[in-house]
Amino acid sequence: MSHHLVDVKMIRESFIALFLALIADSFAGVLLNRSIWVFNAIPGLLMILPALLDMRGNIYGAQISRLSSKLHLGEIKGMKDEEVRINIVASIALAFTVSYIMIFLTGGAFYLFNGIIISLFIILTIVLTNHFFTSSILTPVAAYLSVKSYEKKWNPDNIGVPLMSAIGDFMVVFFLILSTLLILWLPSILRYILLSIWISYTVYIFYKTTKTREGKRIYRESFTVLIIVGMLELVTGGMWEGYKIAILLLILPPFQETIGNIGSVLSARLSSFIYLGYIEPGFVPHGEHFWRDVVSTFILTIIMSSIVAGLAFFYAFDFRIVWVIFIAGLLAATLLIIISYYLTYFSIKLKIDPDNTVIPIITTLADIIGSGSVILLYMLIF
Image (cartoon, rainbow, N blue to C red; front, side, top):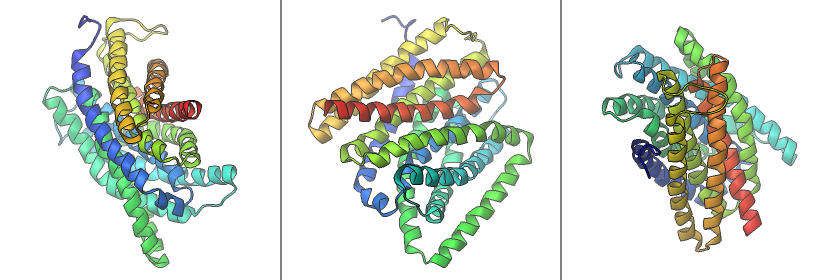
């Protein structure tokens, strides 16, 4: 196939990052599979997990995309740049503040669908403890990956989000389970003290973010989108809560994160290409860069779906699971390519920075489409 039809550099760079992410997500799936008892002990905790995994991609993926655009435009020179610090602080503030609303939405959704009132206080303390561990590590790592990969002549759009997935998904699952065990072990009075600490920290980090013009803009444009996609993510959470099947809990994290990462790579590249003038946005997609990225995205999807299917077959020794994953991957990729382009197109038409909006929506839709496709095909074929 002609190199004019395929972006070999995108496939090579993205594949390395996607493969590392797949390995980490597979470990996250195994850990999740082995820790079902933790989620059975606290109803509603598994329902919030997809939103936490998605928030990792939404916040830190958008952070990488913003920094990548500024690096390409020459607005950031290195790690010590003020723009980098503002992005780190804003990402932490978003992770903490969005969680409060998402916990209460989860409680309402769980009661609506199951008629059970869950312990919002315990779940909120667990989630905020998890955020303290993960955000303290992931926000500086995301900034470092963006700047250093650009300095090494790698495109951050190709590798940033998948690598953050490789680091982030396992950390979210690991620290969520660790935080749960810690909170359950603590006496009630210490739980209240810990929650008070996290509330105070949220107020402090929110103040630091909104006192700068750029931080305020990032927060304003991102917050509403994160709440909306978080509400949509409860659909995925509901599917996970309703289908606690060992094989599904094993393959859903690596599959949907792989699909989401591929969609995020495409959307990040589209926004950068449009800013650089390589793609002129129109209602009907056109241009060599656009179609080359579409073909390359399908090739990546076929490669990665095949690997996920192979891992699932190794675990289940049932060839039917291969068809489930492969068909679900192609279906999800097709829908995400279409959605990614038009989200970027309409964001620019509405004068909204696509780096703040498109990736959160794409990763959320990837979770819904990916989980829904796998579960539906699993129920039909099995």
